[in-house]
Image (cartoon, rainbow, N blue to C red; front, top):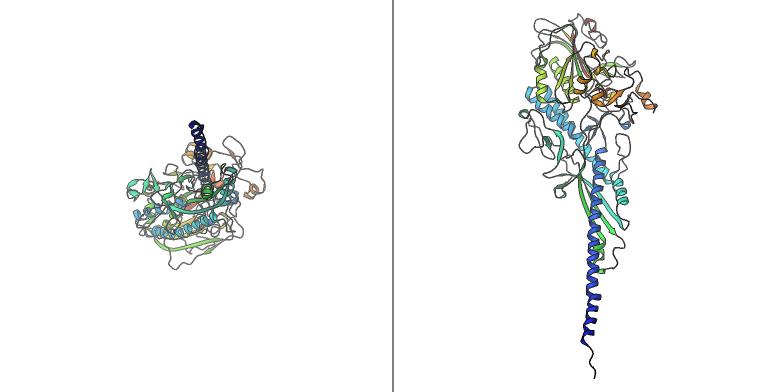
Length: 579
């Protein structure tokens, strides 16, 4: 019998091994490589989608009854969706800016040992708790996607993070990868997170413990107390960024829950060339997750200024601002407070002054502290603590009819100028804002009349009247750059104002057009860009030079009859303004 060659059997065995062992292994390896590539690509798209959601969170604005428009980010007054009843846009204040402002004012109240300031700080802290609760709720609802509530940006455009994320995934995922589910939730980070808010200066007054600041800014999601009050900041950066998933914690009531987490389940259709039954579900499903931190724009733009006017020259016994806060400085005859209703008083025909009758009668020193607090609050955390304290110590000069203009500088200082001409020629108290008339006596028998006009106490659409607590516009609109008002371009830019500070050009310096003209006529403009191009959006008129936040006028002698809301003891004063 003829024997078969052994080489044929070996060849057959090699061929069988290749077909049934090597080829399947190569296919599985290829399938695994494709799986790794698909998962890596899908994870990259999921991370990018997380940044989309984070960006959306920073765009959403909330109307708050105490602080006006609030968001995770600051925005200048340029949005058509932010307009006050006066027809002009309002700024949006970032939540961290609010927290930093109240915290800094708490430190100031402690340094001055002023109970009026501290009571106002506590009032704002209580309001801030509700504001944070409202913002957290809004963020959570916006990510849910099931609510019928509408969320908008500064232009009034709808913001829907879940819908935007789904649209992004659909466009950017490969055609063979389908979205099974997408979930967005908000929360905070344990031991991580940053802010864009610089800590107070100088460091000796900042009341910071080790580990509460990072690169000169507050750390997020930790308690940073001041004056025995607790303060907590949201995690936001100069741009949206991915953050560590392992540090993510679910939303609670103790933090500003600004971090967004995305969880996706994806399915790969027609994956590979061979089906592997016992592994098919696992191979064809992809789970991905990522966490993102939203962005926050800087708190830019001019803030309202304070004018202090000695109508008949400097008053003896009032040497500097600290004397205003001293209860021993004044012996009051009568202090009367009013709220303006029906429009701006006295320019609007239906406007009237409505007298308040508080349970505890105010005194002049308390009024100085209260109105000063609201002016500082309008400046947010921009002024440095040492600059505020230096302002209070700086002595007044002596001269007839002095007008002091106090403004916040970009570098954290406070500018004080004596201006010969007033850019706010008619003293107006804005609708739903406050005025106080103090008929008082100083040591030596001097009996001045002091009038406070505060336009920035009430900030919201619900409480702030037609200007919503925004400073009143000066005239002409470019007064900050004019020598007759004590200004020029170099002075203005140090204050963040004027052409160099705002990068705007004034077309109508006199501001003769009414705000509703700019709203109704799309071709109308008061401002253009730095190079003369047309702006897409017109800012609030006071944005260019800053507006009047607080006016205090001191002058006159006591009259035989007490002040009333009609004459306001103004007949005794030689000033040029109307009340």
